[in-house]
Image 1 (tube, one colour):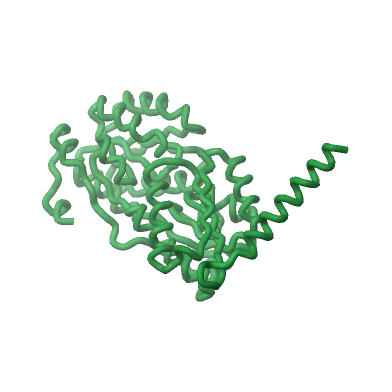
Image 2: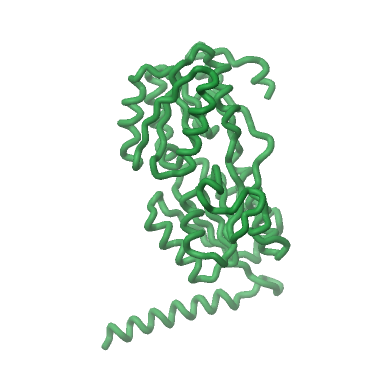
Amino acid sequence: MWKKGLALLVVCLVGFLLWHESSLEAPGGGKMYRVGILQLAEHPALDAANKGFVDGLREEGFVDNVILDQQNAQGDQSNLNTIAQRFVARNSDLVVAIATPAVQAMANATKDIPVLGTAVTSFTTARLVDSDEHPGGNVSGTTDMVPMEKRVELVHQLLPNAKKIGTIYSSSEVNSQLQAESFRKEAQKYGMELVEITVSNVNDVPQAANQLAIMGIDAVYFPTDNIIASSYANIVTIFSSANVPVFPSDETWLKTGGLAAYSVDFYRLGVQTGHMAARVLRGESTPDSMPIEMQEPIKFVFNQDEADRLHIQIPESLRQQ
């Protein structure tokens, strides 16, 4: 009997807390908004997008009238699903999901609560929207897409004699597969071959990197892949020791030895998503009619120390960017 009583007490307590949250008013009156933040994992790019989102909301005046529920799934799919269900149970007014698997978890959990994704390469490839221009459901957001022709052209500009480019990406991330496929097609235009190794989890990454480093590649390219990004410092060390130039998709890699990249600013991408969220919360827009937003302009960034170490000249035309 005491177990049934305890279970009833827990249910009543949860119900009271949900009712209490729903009845809260902002200081000075007005609605108190509940916003969930679901982040796939902890690494610099996603952390920056998270901070940018919060700052973007603040810029729009959502400071004392919003309850932010920050959750990090630590790269675990079951955690993503559990947190997503929690946000639904708490009747969140909006959820921002950071990285493709996080957005997919939220999209599977609700068709009613507005969901804005960020740090997502392709919403259409991930089957999150009908189209970038007309999402058509409860999901919209911002993309970290950079035209692949620019990234491949960059490798050719800095390494005109390169013939074999390596890459490692997660076999479970559809956007990583898309980027690898796009890079492969563009690389063929310059007579370059893409050597691919896929991994299933973060523990596979060091072995894959060591294997790729001894395969005679001229450079290595990395897509915006969350499993790879979680190990980026160790990866760069492996390829730097082998004198293999690293071309990442995220500028944070350059701090540990990456060579050059075209990259979005993930903090600014988060801010942009925060501005979109403000329009939804104010009732000015709904995700179904909010086109997926890109960031402009795309930045060119490079590591001069690494270029000097590898005896690679950065053309003045690129420096001016």
